[in-house]
Length: 229
Image (cartoon, rainbow, N blue to C red):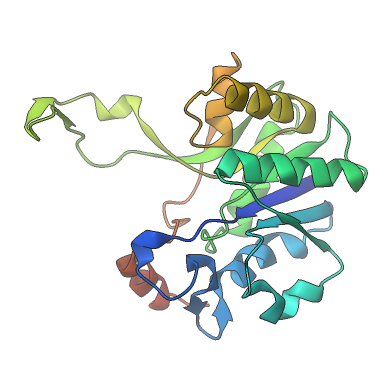
């Protein structure tokens, strides 16, 4: 099956929880930066139309990477929030020729272990979907709801909860509209799916691998270092 798609990678954050000397996407996995592995997940896909990376205006690490001169990658300046960075990326895709109905995948820069099988599963599952959706994983552990005092107030049914991963896949026009409207309304938007939900849509969850983790803490990088790269 052929399904042309575009990619936006928001990467303007600093990743303060890593307590590192650089943004987390530039930490090394083997001999290469995390973001290089992340971009590789998409660059060799024959259906890729274009890829945009949203970076901080003061990012001094990107120009040092070999992929910074890759003609398939467009750099744009990110914004204060993730949604701002994604919107800037979507605007750049339009300049590259993307249309309202084109599929756009938004993927975390610090999620470098995306399996190609998961990517293909997402693309094929959502190809004809009217809304779009995202990779996700069912919650495995018992969940606890707590009060302001830190004590348990309830134990919800974990069967009702999934962890949201990326890529998240939506058509350019509706996603751009949802993000813009949600930001203008001051809504709490933590990912692209939450913007689509705010706009009244119901994204489809597509089960993926649990090892498609986002590197946010030092122990995540330690775990990754023990995996083949």
